[in-house]
Image 1: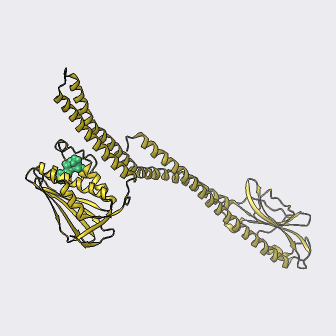
Image 2 (image 1 turned 180 degrees about the vertical axis):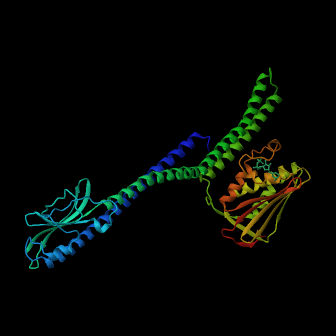
Image 3 (image 1 turned 90 degrees about the vertical axis):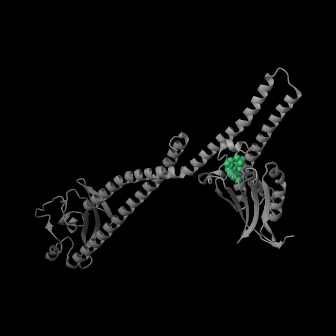
Length: 449
Ligand code: ADP
């Protein structure tokens, strides 16, 4: 697959698309995850802030007596309490201070004048707000979240305002860490996806590439096979044309040679057409489906090829090992072609005085037709390959028989269309047995006479 540019490009673009789609999905997921974390933390902070503010408000309310006036009890409730009249020291929050120390409190009179401070003392806080809402502010480059509440006295009079806030430094640091993790993790994730998609696209392309190679091989083999008879025809024509005068016998011979090669070409083209049709699914079972009596089929073939067997001095016999008629559903024309291919091969590859036997028997739910010969046999390592298109064990030897190496491929394709199979058992110099196994689609036994 490495040499083919088209496949490399297709693999690359497949992997590219995969990375792109997965990259977008991963980025959206990361963004969603980031937003979810952010949202959850914001909600927690707000809830905490509201609850702290309410607790302080309720505690102060019980000890405040007159508007704008601070009682001693109130100063004890608040941590680091400081009246602004006395000089309060305003400092920035320190990194690493415990979370409870992240809070600040401000007490303001009704005119928004600062009366007392507690907790953190950051500078530049916004001390006025009309509605009791949560807000995020930035003071001195640091972010704070705060809430503004109306403060009441014991008698429910308006005392002034209470401002409760918290530093967002810890939250911002946490978000920064999550952002770093995502920014580092995302490219690493996409990189791993790129590797995986390159591997996956290679895996997905492999069967396509194999079938492409098979087609390439098939085309090359077909061209090669067609070239031989064509070359023979051309040579015959050229040598005939070179003759100064053509006798009647020479003319007849030439035409006969051309006719023979033409016959070979026509047969090959017909075979190729059948294979192509089977490949494309046009030649489908059960097109023209009918009930076929295998007893008749075997007897007919034995009869038809009896003459060929006599001319090659081979004994051809049929043996029906069942007493009933064995019927299968299928295409008569195709099954006839299948068995005759096996029988013609057996006759062709069996030397004179040998024997070819066609046996019909039944085993479990299958009908078996064995074509057994005492011929030259097939070496074990070749037995698997003989069903490949154009494959011949020994091309020179086989070409004398006129075969092009398509007979068994067609036979196997027909068997498979009928949900059947062909197996071979063979020993060189001793003979071969091809077994066709066909299932009964609708089996019926009727007494065979
Ligand atoms: P061909 O047209 O060459 O016979 P086939 O596809 O029918 O092509 O067979 C493929 C090859 O298998 C043949 O070339 C031959 O070498 C081998 N073969 C097939 N049948 C037999 C057999 N009965 N005995 C020995 N060899 C066989």
